[in-house]
Amino acid sequence: MFKNIVFIILTISFLKTTSAQTVSPSLKEESDIYEKIYDAPLILDETQPTPLHELYNTKPLLVVLIFTRCTGVCNPFLLRLKESLQFKAKKDSFNVLVMSFDPRDSIKDMNLLARRFALEDNNQWIFAVTDSIPKLNQSISFYPVWDSIRNQYDHDALLVGVNNEGYITKKLIGMRGGHDLDLLIASVNNVFSPTYRLPNKNVLFSCFNYDPKTGKNKLGLGLLFIALPAILTVLILIVIGFSVRSKASELEESS
Image 1 (tube, rainbow, N blue to C red):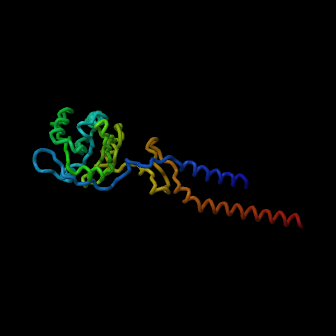
Image 2: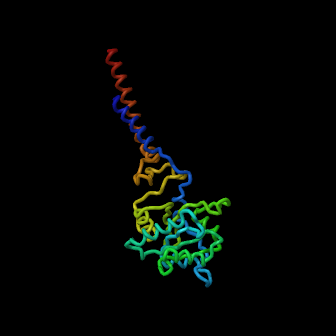
């Protein structure tokens, strides 16, 4: 009997321990997933602006946010992305839209950037600017901060996957490896990927929480609540059984 009680107590403690984990307050990569990106008017050349939906309706997009005067992550980010994508087997299933979030950038600046990376004749890569930067940034939760001392923006290296209906399917922050890019490309092509949404303050009681650092699932607090009725029932039965045995022992001693 005592062993059963100890086992149940240890089980409850284990569930509580494994469900506890450090959760990022922002969880930026999970924001705006399955929301529509803002249909910004894009300046691709000297002609009339092109609505963003005309691009993603043609092919899903990998949207890159940069600015041409960047002295930090933008150039290494673009170079790494170019090198990583050229070896993808299904690279014809999407286009890459390189967008500037700097109001100072013109389409001429973006064309110079394309030539710098030898991408000016690559039809898969599209370079653009827009006069609707705040609305576009807000739709993907991208908030660069201007540093007036350095005359630079502090910002994440952000890659956003958009399917052919304009929905954000996945976001990647920072320099990422081939596996993450494969998942992003699969998501914009509406291919099922066996991953789980990261926990946040709105889903505290999920049964399993996906840890992006380990790539594994951990038991969540919701699993404890599901098991709680069964655990309480077992505890009640144990208490009743213990009580019945005690009374039986008392009757035997009195007789």
